[in-house]
Image 1 (cartoon, rainbow, N blue to C red):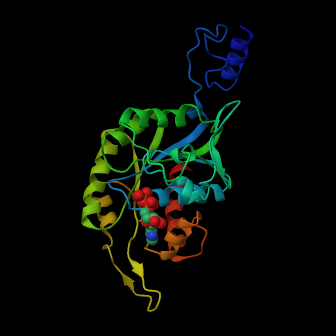
Image 2 (cartoon, rainbow, N blue to C red):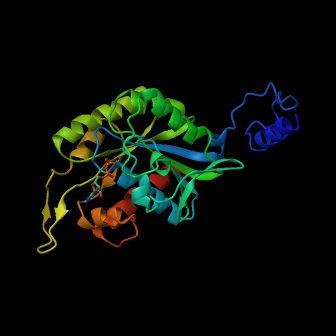
Image 3 (cartoon, protein in one colour):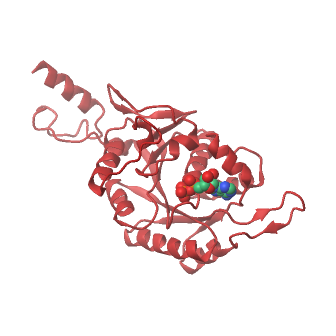
Length: 287
Ligand code: ADP
């Protein structure tokens, strides 16, 4: 009995319905989940039509850029089978822990993070789970992680347009919108169009398109080489009537920094400059 009362007090203290809940005098009848999402101002998904286009790289660099502006930021790794966020944030040796107010997220220099990779016993363990189990894990990241008060929660989505990203979107309340990451070649753009249409079909605003791997500046002569083509993302944005946030060039330092668990946004490279403009455009939408 005493135990039940303590449990109820903890739940009510962090519940978004505190003060207005009719069940608060009767712990037995209260089945409200603690509404952790209500304490987060802006929830954004980062999606892509296919894997390998730089979705996770954009997510962590956006998180770092926002955090460097003094904002409180969290990253939810929605990619259960390919959870790369901890590696890119340099916290792959951390683990999520149970605390008095729920699961405590890992923290990477001020950025809170929850990911399947922070639960697995070894970084080489594959997650061979079927859909419902993956969704249960994401649900836990949403409902049970003690995110606290955040300005932004960035959700790195599973790639593609299958039922998996669709289910993730349905699990998160009050999403502000989606950023779609693409590369400029036709095959990626084809899939990205589907991602834009998926987001539109879910009545979610498309905040904008980011064209990644948009040409390579030759370190010797300075000439731009369009390895995967260029400009396709901007054209697609125009055709589909959604904002174009900007382009990021191919830059070997992005790959090297990512592998070391560091972001490039503060690196002073060409790519860092391009990314700064993307962040600026996004910030204007939320000011
Ligand atoms: P996704 O999340 O879409 O699967 P990642 O963000 O994991 O893609 O990126 C895939 C790989 O490409 C990573 O090794 C990353 O460091 C690298 N990468 C991403 N963007 C760039 C870029 N603009 N220039 C060079 N390498 C990049």
